[in-house]
Length: 196
Image (cartoon, rainbow, N blue to C red; front, side, top):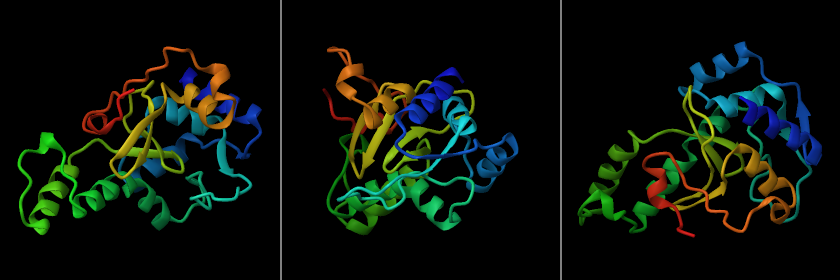
């Protein structure tokens, strides 16, 4: 929990976004029940410490509202964000991608899509933090690296939630040791990581 609390404090100090009061335990439970996942412990503590809800848009931003608004957000939009990692892989498969660990790719694209979707239905859920940055779901887990996910282009964007906030919203070089080499811990998704 300390990771999440400290990450929220660092985000508030960075003064890069509006912070609403943190989510209550009742709100967190409602979200988990409604969307079918459990926040990792550090992600839960982060959102309980303060809910980032908006920031001034910058030119070229991909996301109009990069912070998922777990309290008042459109449920359809939140579901879309939760589906983003899987949908990105499916789109890549549609365009010819096939991971070597999946065995032989079916020649028929529809069959390849069906096989990939069956596999993807079983992978660990990723939960959005900010734009296309994600943490693995899972009550009782913490300290996972934050993943930047764009289709099958996946990389670590922080060794943990604190490192991620420093990377995304502060002077990354000031906080990064020369031997910075985060390693993803979540099954399936780590198979896509760019190797440093």
